[in-house]
Picture 1 (tube, helix red, strand yellow):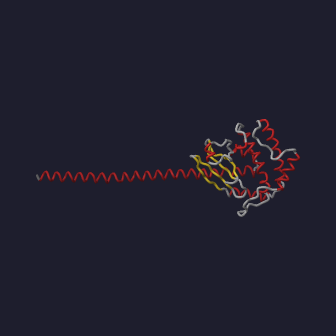
Picture 2 (cartoon, rainbow, N blue to C red):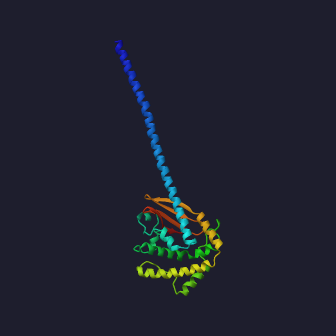
Length: 262
């Protein structure tokens, strides 16, 4: 009888020891799994933040190069050709409120990239021609809001050239015309704006002009916004009321739209 009691006591002791051991073994494993899950979540968040910061920096760099292209080097066509994507807005873009922003809102979608680049360049020079004159005569300051976006002196230069060349202003609405007509009109517009730009740059203070370009590049601000898993980057600048929208498409980041500020 005593032997049975002792055996039962030993059995209970072994059971308790086994449960205790399993608890001691299982608890660290559970804690390790929980810690691993937290670590993995943190890594995903860190990678996401790292990617976001990297793409924000990329968007800023692209706009710095764009400003150099159109204002410093004055290679407007090459700049649009290199940094822009010409696609009509899709449903996601429309949901993001970009239907009036996409670069193809004013041009036919069936034209090739080179022609679309020429059209975008011509529209830029037509709509922002006065800015070249203003940047060379009006320093950008923090209190300078809004920055001037038109100049009667520039208008006089532009009208002089267009009258001399018997051209009309605004120059052209590209919708509804075939490729041959568009190319012919582009040649006329490019010639006019080359002449206007030459006269404008003879009448600007180059020191003010260069300083203003540097100010714009230093002031770039990037905002990220996401719609339906598509990420957009809005870039604004101090001074002129011009903004840019960029997105990663087909493996590369491109300017997909221009806006009046962002």
